[in-house]
Length: 77
Length: 100
Image (cartoon, rainbow over all chains, first blue to last red; front, side):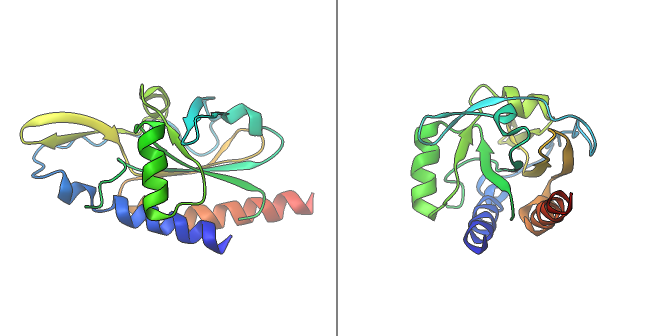
C-alpha cells in the first residue's frame, strides 16, 4: 500500500509540472466536472500499458477503484 | 488501500504509458483514453492554451468508485495533485465494507 501511495505521489508530482512545460496560458478553460459524489460511474473500457483491456464494470462487486487522472506522460521535463 | 484497484488514466498511447511507467517506476497500470471518450464522459477534459492555440488534455483528477459502481470521491484541479484524500476515502470504504 505504501508503495502504491508513493507511486501515486510521484505520478502526481511529475504531472504537476505540466502547466509550466505547456508555456504561457492565457485562456485556459477548466472543465466542469460533470459527475458528483453519489452518481453512478459511467462504464468505460480502456487499454492498459501492457495492451490489456480494462473495463470498469468488471470490478463491480469485487473491488473499489481509484482513478488517478494525469495530464500527459513525460511532462515532468 | 484495502480492497482497491488503482489505475492512472491519460490520453497517451499504451506504448507511451508503458515507457512513462518504467521511467518513473509506477507499479500500477496506466490506462489509455486515446479517443478521450472516458475523459469527456467524466467531464475531465481541460482546454489548455499553448501559444494561442487550444489543446484538450486531461484535467488532473482523482476519482474513487465503490464496489457498487458509485462515485464516492471526485476532485479535479490542483488539489488532485495530492492523492491522500482519495486514499483515505478508499481506506474508509474498505473499513465500512469489512464491517458489513
